[in-house]
Length: 224
Image (cartoon, rainbow, N blue to C red; front, side, top):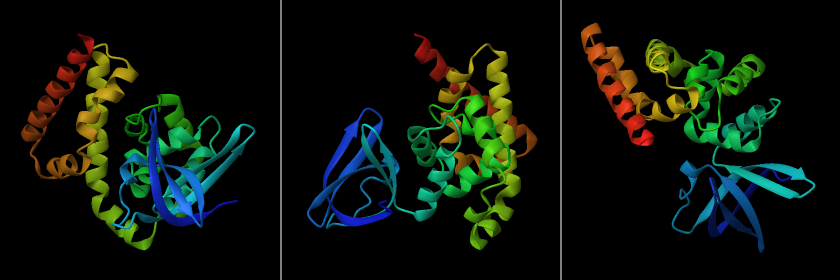
């Protein structure tokens, strides 16, 4: 079982939504799928170290590489859930860092999880049910301190997203449409969490009106 590789990137590849590298390790080229957000982080020499998860199937072997060991280990937990494959695991870890994903699962934030492509309500709920009591080891001391400081903001943001979701649902939009268009808000989570912390109730409503207009515009563009 391959667990870690260090080598030189000799090729990058993309097949549909999958992206990765070919890594030269001792004269052998390993084809490794990576998180799209982690591609290109090698130094000028193109040398990189990756924590690897290896999956063996009848039709071949697949390697999944991560910059951080915690990402690799959380990926393993995610794909251990029945019905969740490696591509869903990669999509989740591309959209969320380790602490964000662990918090979303432990805080029962299914609507936040469904903003990732390929994650429906049932899959999100299955992740929460099967993993919420198994992820303590992913929280280090520093993360716990930061999480405590941001707990109120995170809860505010989650409730804010839930409100937007319910409004769009009441307007007749379905889950797939909502989870795609709502990324207008969730991609700026840090910025919007900070804003919610500082805004008055009136200013919060104005921000929600602004976000709803942006989302509805995005939905109307898709409908044309």
